[in-house]
Length: 415
Image (cartoon, rainbow, N blue to C red; front, side, top):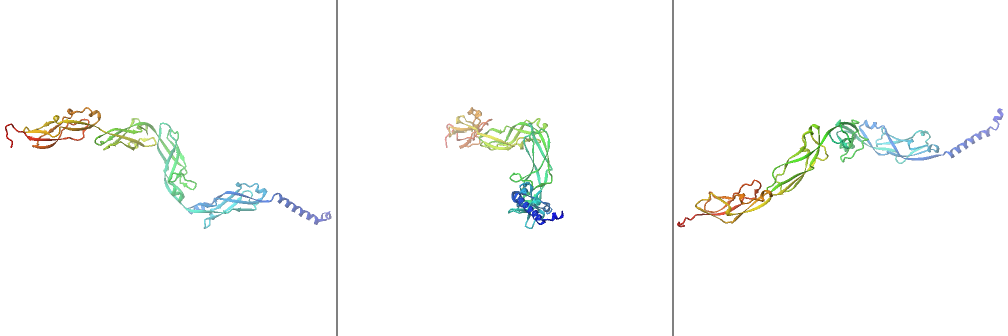
């Protein structure tokens, strides 16, 4: 038996070796080594604490995504997906040039990968920056409309000041920390919990992924007030320029919606815009006023715009000219020893006022007169006295030229 087994042993060994070679050839033909390239593989940064402990933060300059080429058997390559590939950069191994080698591993198939090659980018390059912490006041922004008949009274954030930490360049860009809440349809006081948001000086929202706040959420208490629509009235001070009259003062809008407690609103039906000066005006004037300046304590404006447009209309007064013959001018205190003559036959008096007040005026209403007391012989300009008008005024006080002479007594010789 032993002889039969050992018989032709050389041929038997060669047959085994040949079978192995044939098996290897068949295996490599059916399952050869091949390569596959995966692009845009995100690089996972680890051990960030190594920099944070030094009060440093980082910003990626290059290497946040890489291209990976793997070589393995076809049976392995065909099973691989992007999800199996992990690229990592360890910040604890940051070089003096601020670069970190990118390491690639393949889940479940690491031992079966013959080669791993990165493309032109094989290191993560970063820019280091100091961390900074700064305090900001919290601004509450509401969106939506509260229920009908209500307005927002107070918006109180807790805390009202927060500390924000991040890269110094990013902290410098923050202008405002906001708590944005939706108040749409609410009809009672409520408290909201929201995350803080960060905005730059242009009002654009900043990416908060590299910022941290000393509180994760802000509590915002919203207090509601009742609303009421009230009329506006106006009261002017001063006098328009002489020769003009105040025709009208119009407010647009004529009413506003205010907010307050029910007790404050109960007896309030009108908001008075007082102290509006028309002093010296000669033409129509328009201006905007902030109606909040005229609201009583405890009352606020419920509408968006606080501006009210004031239109002041000024018109010139009518004028009437009245001619007065000299024989209708009453003479007072004339000396019996003097004679009076006039150089003019009549004078003209100009009266200004509203048409309804001056249209029927005549000489008898003016009672013109002159006073000759203390006047001596000679030529004089004398102001004509006129009766004071209740509604209207004289544009100017007229003068008349007179001549006073000694009266000649009959039979007396002139010198």
